[in-house]
Amino acid sequence: MSTHHTILCLSGAGLPAWIWDDVQQLLGGSDHVAVAARPTRIAGAGLRDYAEAALGSAPAGRFAVVAHSAGGVVGAEIARLAPDRVSAFLAVTAVIPEPGGSFLSTVPAPNRWVLRAAMRFAGTRPPDAAIRRGLAYGLENRTTDRIIADFAPESAALYSDKVARRPWNVRRGYVFTEADRELPMAMQRRSAQRLGPEWTNQLDTGHLPMIENPRALAGSITEFLAADPDVDQTGHADQRPSGLRRRHD
Image (cartoon, rainbow, N blue to C red):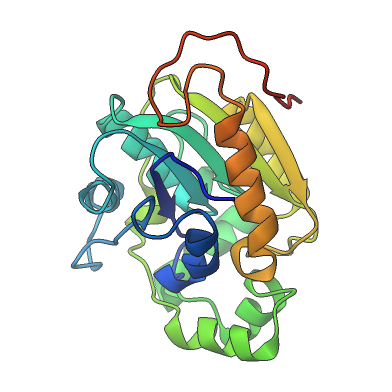
């Protein structure tokens, strides 16, 4: 299931890098797959700071972005800052705002107002019970306990800063998670519509498919990258006609 592409994985808000360990191993290890770093100082960090920290930890040369949850917003900023380095973009139950929008703008009212107020008064770390009920739904208790212990609050600007007003100029895909209690299917569909994916897939998991079913997610990533007729197995441009299957909406 390994891939010859280089990949930068973007975790959802607050989630530790280890959530990608199994997928990283299945895709060929750290030589091919890197997990994006966060800013050294979270307090006051803006969306651009998140994107620049991620770029600083990216593989050399061109790479595919695999963005999970709020990582979709960071991935959009990466695509703006380094369009010549991003070869493809795969959203995994990811939040994708309209150009000029923010993470918060994707949340329907009145939930958006409630979330904004909650972050202002209580910070960006959700209660443990909310993590168990939504983010970690479908996982074993021991894994859920580890996620809660390692969950790190993010800067409020990650949620409120606006993404650039520019069109996507790379090949795009979206992986839906059918049993997701953190990002319901309706919100996933709206994000996918904004992204305009050329390839989609659905997994029967909760919000963390990289933990719940890493083999299925690694398979989705491999299939998405392999289905690009313009890229050969070394990740370089290829003019050969494609005989590979591509999935569309």
